[in-house]
Length: 104
Image (cartoon, rainbow, N blue to C red; front, side, top):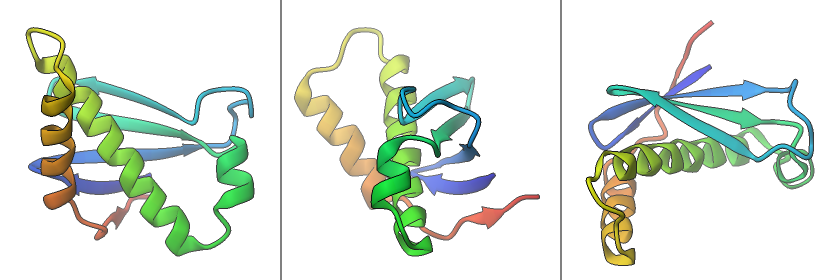
């Protein structure tokens, strides 16, 4: 598991090798202020396109951002328009960090 800081939120990213190549690439979930993103490492994109640790780390950051954006969107009282989604993503990209902490 790795932790990424996205805006003012810590996002847990969990790598799951037990998923099928046919399953979706990530499964975001949250309980209150806790955001968790499970990454399907059997997905063809992960297996064929990501060959180095820096590529995987940067991709996990973007998956953490996707989970954060999904969480923030779920908190809205009405469906967001495209402009609102771009603002949420922009905030996440501006205030995110690659400095993750390894947890055993």
